[in-house]
Each structure stands twice: as structure tokens, then as C-alpha cells.
Length: 547
Image 1 (cartoon, rainbow, N blue to C red):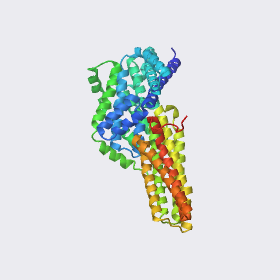
Image 2: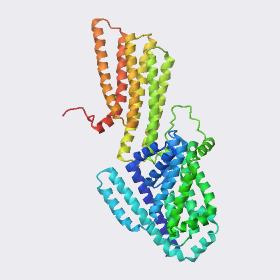
Image 3: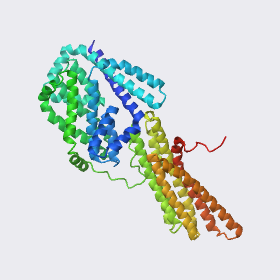
Image 4: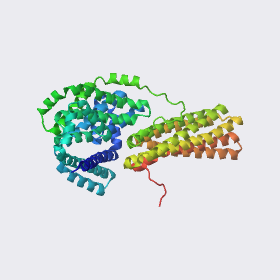
């Protein structure tokens, strides 16, 4: 086989390996994306739990880069502390070694079974999760197939005089081997792919054990570069976790590189098989790093906080704070970001409601204009959230995530409509009260205050429904909507009774009726947040119409 043919085969087989890893990664995120985000969210509380969460999630995802993206997004948004985030990365690094350990054994006979079973599940699966797991199984099969093909391609070239001469010239300088492996892992975006390639070279006899261990160190450095590259160009806070992870890897490599010979002798006592030597050293390196650095993480975190301080937030409240474009390819993280931004919209609508309540007691036109300007902020945030949600990689969404995207967008739409009602209707009524020097009766003001208070309470309930899928809050929202309807009916009946009896207070009675009508409209938008959850649980019929 010519050198050109060998290169073509190698490139194709490496691409097949990367595609298999991508299929596993995307399939797992589709099947368990929200659950993985929840595991990380629960785990990011203590260092030990964070370490275990990172190990587990990365073992499933087969990508420490994907884990780093999730963690960086959480820390950049201020949702979690930097110390447990760094602990997650220590766990993620160990998690990748478990994958390499499994693949270092001769299990290539399994790949036809995996591909067949995965294809059957993908084509015949009764649910989206089964089909996604079929995708994962196909990906595992392709990874094993590519490893088998790599071994077959490399094996004939072990006798190449040119290759052996080149590697013999490089072998005395381990720094060059580390650099080559670093570039390989960075280009492959996967330490697993780089390690499998190194193991194939070692098994074929192209490189010796000393060179294999040096290249393992380079692979660990290269895979730490990918999250760093992905985090550049945005908020500097996002660099904390990637740079902390890279710094730990660099320190580990500086310590381990001079000790390769005694480490090699020690590992040879357990298993001299070339592929197992590389896999065992990869595991040992990351386990030792985790043991050494798990305790001093608070000191490392303080250094990173000084080097990358929080960016001063824009004074413009209409500028989104949580819509991280780098997370768009990871739906579970992107949806979490969008939900947090929508909660900001809810806080602003709450401010508008409180301003509306005050303006029916007292205040002037300047306060009316201030509330109206606040609606512009709600509109701008809504537009940003809508664009962000439409930019998420919809192909990577599972059914649960697609529903959550719909719920987040629906809540944002309802908040935007509520803001418009406050701006275009309630503020018009407040301006009318001020211009005509009208004063509502005390009992009417008390009723309006009560409705405003209920709306503020319901806004918090709606946020709970969105974030935590709280059935109790959802039921209460729908029940309160009916009470608002009854309240408006009572107010309307009272107004017409006053008109018939000649006791109507004229403009103030009509003003109160209009206020109640608009508050009920806002309540309807807030309460609609509960409909999707209640329909899913069977507590609410999709339609109230009877056949």
C-alpha cells in the first residue's frame, strides 16, 4: 500500500472514530440531556460530589469538552461556585480514562453486534429515547470498528524504514512527542480519539512504551485546549474553568515527564501489553492529579478570580445577561440560559406591576412615562430570547427538551403581552386619572391593590411552574384565574346597578371597571403558563368544548 493510500485510510478511519464519538455524545444528550444537566446541578455543591458528577457525566457523554462547556456556562452565569466547577473537571478527566480502559481491551468482535442492535433500535424504537439510545449504540459500534481498521492500517507500516527512522529521531526528545500528541488531541477535539490512535501505534510497534507515555501526556494537554478555545472571545469569566483545568494538566505534565522511565517500569509490572500501558498511564495520571489538586482547589479558584474578575454588567437593562451563544449546540445548557433570561423578564414585569399599583394611588406623568419605558426593556429581552431559542440546535433536542423550549417561549410571549397591557392600557388609565384629577374611592383602591397583590403572587407561581414543573402551583394558577373572572363579573354587575340607581360615581366607576378588566387580562396571560403542564399530567383537558 502506497504512502498516499495509507494517509487516506488513516484520515478516513480517524474521521469514522470521531463520528462515532459524536453519535454517542449527541445521542446521550438527546436521551438524557436534561437529566445530565440536573446531575451536574445537584453535584455542584461540594467538591467530592462535584468530582463524582463530572466523572459520571463524562463517562456517559464520552467527552470532557462537552462537560466543560456545561460547567463553564453555569459558572459564567453565577449559578455555581468556581471550586466545585473545577472539581467537576477533575472528575471529567478521570471519566475519559474509563472509556479508554474499556476500549483498550480486544473487544472488536462486538462492533457488528452493536451496530446491528443500534440500527434496529433506531429504526424500530417505540419512543424517541429508545431511538436515541440506538444512535448511541451505533456510535459505540463505529468507534470499535474504526479502532479495528486503524490497527489493520497501521500494522503493515511498522516495517517502514522511513517511519521508524523518523520516530527514532523524535523519540529521544519527549517534548516533541508531547507537542505532536497535543496537536493531535486538539485537532481531534477528543482525548479518547487521540489515546486510541496512540494505543494503535503502540500495539503495531511503531512507537515504544516510553514514547507512548510521552504522547499520552500530550493528549491530556491537547484535550484541555479545546474548552479554552471555545471560551475565548466572550465573557472572560468563562475562561476560569478551562484555564484552571489546563494549568492543572500542565503542572501534572511537568512533574510526570521526567519520571516517565520509572513510571514505565512500574506499569510494566502490572501489564506489559502496549495498549494497556498507555491506557493505564492515562488513568494513573488523571487519578493522581485529582488526588493532588482536590484539596487546594480553593486557592486555585482565588487566583483565577483575581486573574479573571467579573465583567462589569451593562447598565442597559435591556441587554441579555445569560444568553451564551457558545452553548447553542448543547440544548440542555442553552435552555437553562434562556429560562434564566426569561426570569429576568418576569422580574421587570413585576416592577411594572408595582409601579402600576402605585400610580392608581398617587404619582405624576413622569412615573407613567417611566413604567412605559420599562416595557421597551421587556420587548428587547423578549426579542433576544426568541432569537436565541430559534438558534438552538433543534436537531439535538429530545422530546422533553423540545417541550421545554416551547414552554420557555410561551412564558416569554405571555410576559411580553402582560408588559404591553401595562404599558398601553393601564398606563393610559393612570394618565387619565392624573389628567382629570380623579381619585378612586378607598374601597375601590383596596380591591385594586388586592388584585395587584394576587398578580404579583401568581407571577412567582408561574416562575415556579416554569423552572420546577410544580403541579401544585400550576393548579393554583388555573383556580385563581377563575376567581379573577368571578371578581370582574361582580364588579361589572355592581357598576350597572349603580348606573340604574343613579349612584354611579361617573368616571371613577368606569375607570375602576377598565382597570379590573386589564388586570384580569394580565392574569390570563400569567395563568396560561400552567396549561401545558396540567394538560401533560391529565389535570386539564386540551379543550373545554363538549362534543
